[in-house]
Amino acid sequence: MGQPASKYTETGSRYYQLANRDMVYLKSILEAYEGLNTMSTIDGKRGIVRVSFPLCFAGDIEALMHEIAKEIVITEVTQEGEPCSKP
Image (cartoon, rainbow, N blue to C red; front, side, top):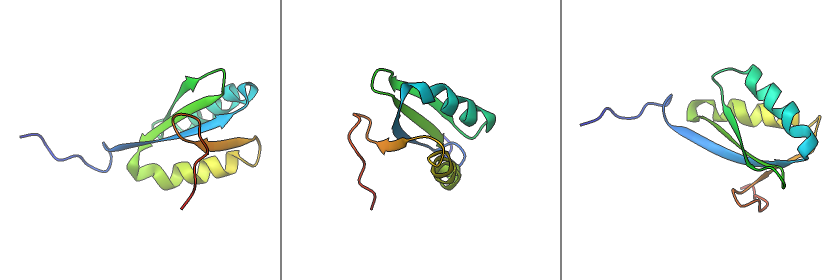
């Protein structure tokens, strides 16, 4: 049997929508936090990206994205680009 997943190997993803002109800016900031996350473009025309991260860093990602939202317009969305409703 395989080993149980650890909090460092389980991953989560969040989707965000932003202006195309801000995608390179976001990617450069996220890449500066090496090992914290990866960003993938889901729909370049609509500006939808996926940020994937180890679950143990979920709080860090949320805080980082909150700070980035002070500089650019960025909205959390579903994978399909629909607005997320926060609990």
